[in-house]
Image (cartoon, rainbow, N blue to C red):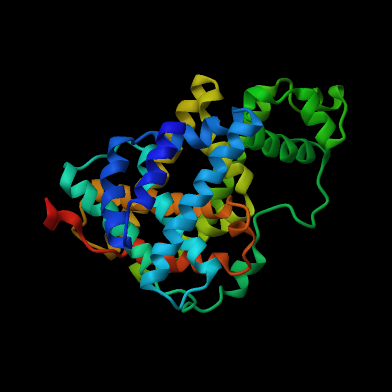
Length: 333
């Protein structure tokens, strides 16, 4: 992991302009395709000192990318540059989360095109979200939770922050203010908690998707509503996102297969909606584009200061739309 972070850091330091960095990173990313998975799943288990060192390195890389973007877009201030820099890192890291592939040159060109779509995206141009979207949080803020829900919410948070194997039932009970017998009444085992959490994530995402696509409209309007529904889900359920990213391997086989099938069906739905806007788009390319967009959203909503931006939903909608509509890489084949 340290070697990978070092290579990423040298890539930024060795680039004199943004275009050089974006091109070289597309090449380097394909050489070390699994680095992002390793970082997100394993970094939390490192000793605190090593974990902090890696975080500083990644932050320095983001600062370096932000500086390169600033040379092309001097009108942008620090928070916008930070957001775009993390979007670039997320584009390149997104290929760690799937096995879809393209011919090498075409794959590099597509990654470059997606990263360039993010860095060139006009920001602050979209109107505010409709009132109905703002009112539907999908979360638990302000609600009086049942004891079962309190336990489940705290379990989701702890599984995300520490990893399933590093959390005990006692840890969950302490966080939820519940005794052992109270937990076992609702969830006989820790695995039952994980299964319930994953099911909760799938149910909430499906509900948001159904609301988004339940209205008639043009293909572009459907794509915009689908994008916004996922942004809303990620903003209100960031710990669930982390659990769905990092802990599916801990599920029993039956539930693991069902969850992965659900992920495939969700991606297929996105692909169908995107192809309605971009007819003739290669299916493999569509999947790579969509996963890149979802990864940008996941990472931004979970990245400290970025996740606390009041305008994050609108900025992510702008970046996501720019990426979804970025040019076709087939001409580079």
